[in-house]
Amino acid sequence: MPTIFDELLERFQAYLAGVDNDLVADKVARIGWDMPARSLEPRALGCLRYLDRLAELAPSSAKPLTRLVADHRDELRWGQTYTAADFGQSFIDNYGWLEVFGTRGHFVNEEVAAGLLILGSNIVYPDHHHIAEEIYIPLTGGTEWRMGEGGFHVRDAGEVIHHASNVSHAMRTGKEPLMALYLWRGGPLAQKSTIGSMVNLRGKS
Ligand SMILES: [Fe+2]
Image (cartoon, rainbow, N blue to C red; front, side):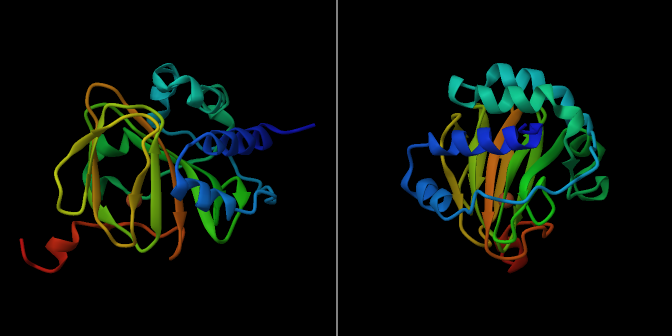
């Protein structure tokens, strides 16, 4: 009998299979979906209070995945990479992720990490970057996203956002929370992001 985790992986894959985007299709085709399960202790976080609203906001294509996660939140291992010292306590109370597969997720994959990110309403996730290449697909709309030195742009649910290795990015939610699917490939897959834009690191601004 399939477990809740099998169902999670299946719905995750099914959602991605429905995304009409060449870059995503290419990445997804290279994922070996027959992954061994990893037994993890459940861990809850404050940001889980947004899950029902997120499942409501998600378009029909993302409902099966967001609903499953909301209904089984207590069986899943939610994580945080940052601490209050990074972006403050309010951020910590409104942020978390679920690694579906990767080096520490519910399924073992040493090449790709993927999961779901939650940000509560009215939260700023400041500029950060990492070695891994990243694809984000917001499952709910209305959040403003920024990449490199560009401005913030509102992204709809289902848009594909590609961050090349070490390109800084930031997000800003409005009155609604955000759930976004992420895929990481290349570089250390459990690495904490470096905070600050590359511009700042080079000392230009
Ligand atoms: Fe990122």
